[in-house]
Amino acid sequence: MTDDAFWLLIERAAEQAGDRDEQAEWLAEELTRLPVEQIVGFQVQLSAHRSRADTWDLWAAARVIMGDFCSDEGFWAFQLWLLGLGHHTFDRVVAEPDLLAEVEPVRALAAKPIHTWSESDWPSWESLDYAAATAHQDATGRELGLEKALSNAGIDLPLTPVPADVDWNPADPAEVAARLPRLSLLFGARVR
Image (cartoon, rainbow, N blue to C red):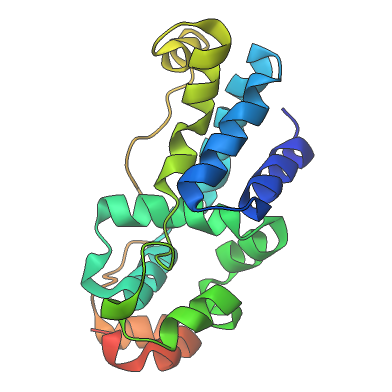
């Protein structure tokens, strides 16, 4: 699957009516219309783009936004949510995580207390991670078929965040404020 085809599917899914689970279901249905190799290619692209967002700076940004609710799983789903913001926004934010302070959905979250966020407010799109596996199973009738196809091709996808950039402590408030000044200012009291 080409990069352009991947982003077109992601952006079209994010535009669909309904919640993120329904958007992921729409995406899975779209993927079933493609050749099986393209479904596998979508998952490879998803993992490659997600790994670009697997940085300590973005993990710190997710912690600024979500506070103590940003576990390993929370950051994993946050990376997927970033993809749903679209190719342009994703590329900008991966290059400079503090630009999240300019992203409208993030600004909307900062404007209200975290305990008032609805399920759809949370910067998380976990179900996106399962769209290709669902599509592959629907297209082939083979349970765990995507995982086997990836394994047979020698592709080992990570299952949890493992930032590969310079290690620092994203829980250190002074360092977070220095690395993410605009986002820290926007969320103020939540920065720990």
